[in-house]
Image (cartoon, rainbow, N blue to C red; front, side, top):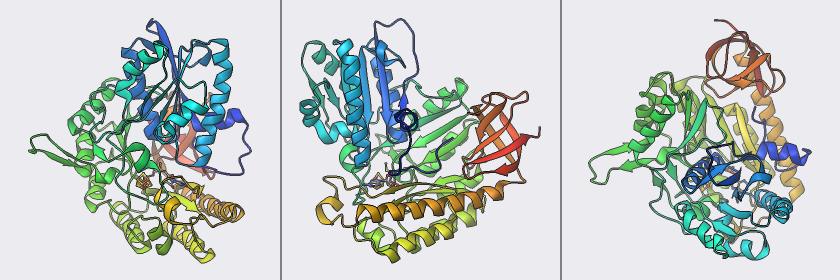
Length: 476
Ligand code: SAM
Ligand code: SF4
């Protein structure tokens, strides 16, 4: 189950628990290749998806993947720069990896992803164990870079591209439960939210060839997958135009194409941007039973002045209008989740209260909540003062988290007493006699196993709930 909150403070977890939540490590491929790659992914789903592309490229170069770092000839950390804490985690991890490198000096260590782009050479200079640094648009160059390292040099490529979408690369599914998989539909971001490093670390927005997306979804269906999540920083601005200009596909049309492949395939998507989500998308979701009624619609703040400073390009009224449209077209049952930032530059107590009142109005099922972390090079870092004291940020974040716990529980209580269609993902964490799956709204549902198994759709009558989970009985 996902944690109900994403804490940027009051972190009482052990290093092992923290690693299990924040990091994903490769699964094994044992095809007898000469060398082994171990890859850890940090940060957003896009990074996990990129690691699957990287593993595919490295597989072609003679690397199986391993989940045991001690077995690895090549260790990759696919990193995140979104908040300072994410970068610090990776720096600490490099220190730990040094222990393995000392035992096996030939082991190569590479830093991939957003930190690579942001920190480039300083990583090579300050972190002596790092042999190569590769940005998110340069993974096709990995074979050359590995040869350079094999030849005794350090290697860097952090060039960003306006075209690269890795459309033709068939990802190796690393962390999949065999039931659900991610499909990247676009890369980069053209929005310039003032707090965010993504436009700098991942470059300009570009949409992937719609046919290659449909082919990837089709291949997953053949392999037995039951759910795909279409990924992009702002899926609503997906727009692919064929080379001859004769064909154009927008996000609503893409959703429809994937949904039509197989009515047994659940289709999810993330992230929707409040300024771009259209009624056409909402009606497409309504039209197909297999498009999940769940929308991740990050608000970031409930106050219009703060939203303007954040350069989100919508205000509170616009956001609420979009929520009203979701409720009007898709009903109260549609799940809505958000990202929230506490203590952005100059945010007053009253403005913080506006975030809490927005949460009361929307009744989010779930939120990812953070306190503001200034990132070098962003618009906010250049133009605004990070003037809210850390203690105040933490207190406001705690209030936002408390509000979310309240609304998650309210929303979950509405699910009690109803039958939900659940896609089984595996055993529950606590018992092999119980299964865990998700309903349409992406909520975790736990129920007795009976004769059901991973990958089954099961109708479950929900009789109880907690803040993060629904509990029920299969009724088939
Ligand atoms: N593209 C998505 C969107 O627009 O909502 C989200 C992308 S970002 C990877 C995920 C979340 O991290 C953001 O929605 C925001 O809440 C949070 N975030 C980004 N930059 C941050 C910063 N400097 N400090 C705190 N949180 C931040
Ligand atoms: Fe960052 Fe804004 Fe782009 Fe999301 S939409 S990735 S928050 S710049």
